[in-house]
Image (cartoon, one colour):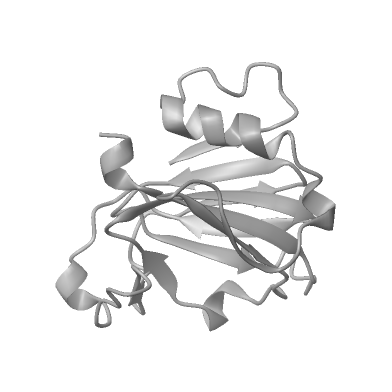
Length: 158
C-alpha cells in the first residue's frame, strides 16, 4: 500500500514508473469534470470514475484483487479506507470474481487494521493481495463523494 497526494511536488518519489506516469497523467485532467464510468487510458490501463455514498465500515466487506493494482484517487469530499497489510487466507473469502478481479472478505475484523482518510487529490495504491475497504464514512458521517480508481495490470509493475 502506498499513500500520496497529487498536489505534492514529491509525490512520485518511490513510485513504480507506471504508477508515477499515471499520476502525472491524472494531474493533466480536470478530475471534477470527468464523466462517471470507464475511461481507457492505454490499451491495458483504465479508470473507473464513480460517485458512491459512504457507509459504515461494519456494513461493507473488504475487497482484494489478484490481477490489477488499484490507484484510488479522491476527487471530492472525504473518504475513509480501512486496510490491512496482513496476508489473508483467500479460501476464507467469498468466491473470486475473475471478470471484475475481486474477492470479498466477510471476515476482516480479526486482522490488524489501518485507517486512512483521503481528501481531494490524495491517492492510495493497493497491490494484489492487499485487503481494503474503501468508501467508508468519515467521523461517522455519510458523504456523497466522487472518486476514480485506475486499474493497472500487475505485470506492468513487477
